[in-house]
Amino acid sequence: MIDTGDVEASSAASTTKPTERRTSAKLESASADTKVQHPSHSKSGHKRVKSKTDLDSKSLDTGKESISGLKIDGVKAKATKEPKQLSQKRPAEAEDDDELENKANKTIKKRKSKEKKEKVAMPLAVRTAVGSLKHSMYIGAHISAAGGVQNSVNNALQIGCNSFALFLKSQRKWTNPPLSPDARDQFKALCIEHKYDATKHILPHGSYLVNLAQADPEKAEQAYSCFLDDLKRCDALGIELYNFHPGNTGSNARPEAIARIAAQLNKAHKATKNVITVLENMAGSGNVVGSTWEDLRDIIALIDNKARVGVCIDTCHTFAAGYDIRSAEAFKETMDKFESIIGLSYLKALHLNDSKAPFASHRDLHANIGTGFLGLRAFHNVMNYLPFQGLPMVLETPIERKGPDGKTIEDKGVWAAEIKLLEGLVGADAASDDFKKDDQRLQDIGAEERKKHQNQADKKQQKTLDALFKKVSPKKKGKARTKETLDDEESSDAGCSHSDA
Ligand SMILES: [Zn+2]
Image 1: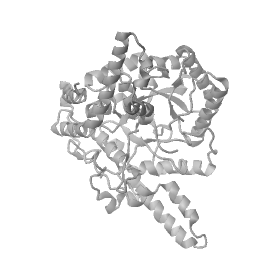
Image 2 (image 1 turned 120 degrees about the vertical axis):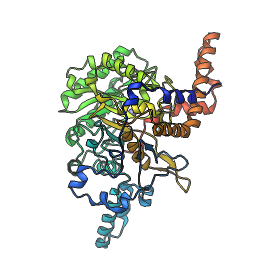
Image 3 (image 1 turned 180 degrees about the vertical axis):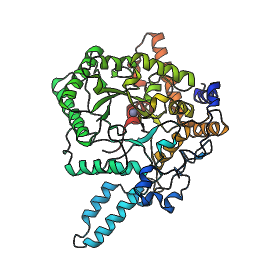
Image 4 (image 1 turned 90 degrees about the horizontal axis):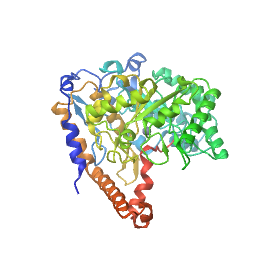
């Protein structure tokens, strides 16, 4: 069996339009260098960002795989190592520990919590001034809001986000405590302080439990109230974009499922003020709604107030759904289709993820940027497509790795480095040696993973062909599936999940 992963990787790297060769990039002075100060930092005298120790950064070691230390056209992606306290303890847990401390010892406690706050705010990468990039690309990640939405702002700042996503409440629970006025006020104040435009560059992600296509009246009501509660939180926080997965037909007819989604959205729009409900495109096939541009167009067509609906393109889902974006030509064709079927005016956000699974596999498996079947060339297309300017572009890539004690830890330095990598692609020359070197290095890191998923896709295809040939449904052969395949199929949605609220 041929490992097409490698074939695809090399062809992606070599497909370059002559015009793009000319878009050379004098990025030496620009953007992705971590020393570029964001205006908000320099103005507000954000001392911890400027401090010598913070800027004295080293290339980040992400364990066995080095995602960072990337060099694109003379721009070195840098990030400081995550402070020990941070990698072992999250802010929310730190607060719990505080409560256990002796209350009589208030002075010590105050000093300690001040120290903790400073540690939390210590940046892994300094935020790039968007104005210093050739195109205005607002790149960030889906960061943690553990302990309250107000914590998301510092978490975003810590890894150099210019946009970010978060969960507004626990995404795995139907009922949650209400948003406290204190958390709301702190969130708003921090957004102003750090110049995050909540109306444009903060993109909450909806709960995985919600299916607006739900046909059962009781379950549909439950989904709606959870959805509406999130939209009301957006209104309270001054957030105007809200991303969610359109839904699942549950084996019912597609047009009816689409009509149910639209009806729920119309109702929710009337019950809230400003927030734009942003439909995310999906990777899956079968009952999943939203893996074609036509599905999304059909939902939008039924929305009464078109100003309240938009679309978020997830690069991994797009590719897995069968829209190629690897070469400049394929990317243009995919975006032209989007424009003619949906319309670019509806595009409100992007999720930036590489894909562990091959083209048109319909599997939602996020990979780190450049290591998957998309490769760096696809992201060069994305970072240089002018209609994406001003939109939030959010990483949902895996950051878990084994710590020295064998326990799984989250290494946010991976996102810090990926943000710098992507910023380095803005205006960069995809024909340059530096670009090709990085492309190859990242492809090498992901080679094993791609091979595994290519084999799975090949086996699946072979089974379907066998079944067709023998006129036997592949489902009847279910017993023959190995445990390994089953585990993998079950975890096929893991790519889009995030660990905390
Ligand atoms: Zn996504």
